Image 1 (spheres, one colour):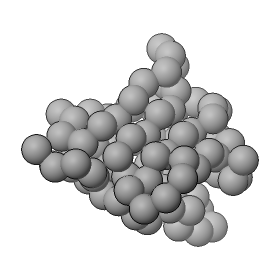
Image 2 (cartoon, rainbow, N blue to C red):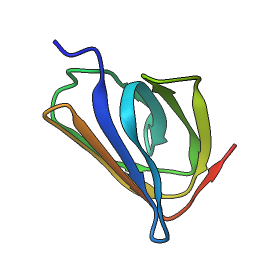
Image 3 (cartoon, one colour):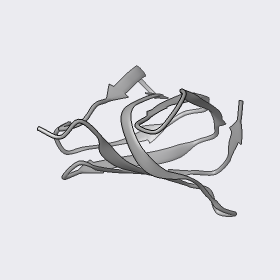
Image 4 (cartoon, rainbow, N blue to C red):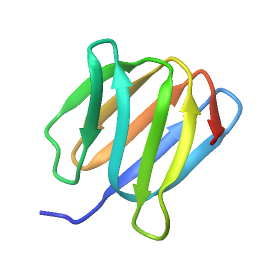
Length: 87
């Protein structure tokens, strides 16, 4: 099993994050969830929340995220948000 996954976070204006990550924490309509390397296929809504990324290359990064979607497939995680501001 891999020790990281490819994480891409997009808004309509920019690519907010495009690096290897070891953990992602976000919230959907039923509560908080986490993504780790090797996570099974998963797709969900994202509600406004504090999105927390533990990257492979440095300290934890936090974003104030707006509504969006997440897709996890084959150790690649794609997050599309209406807005994301570094916290």
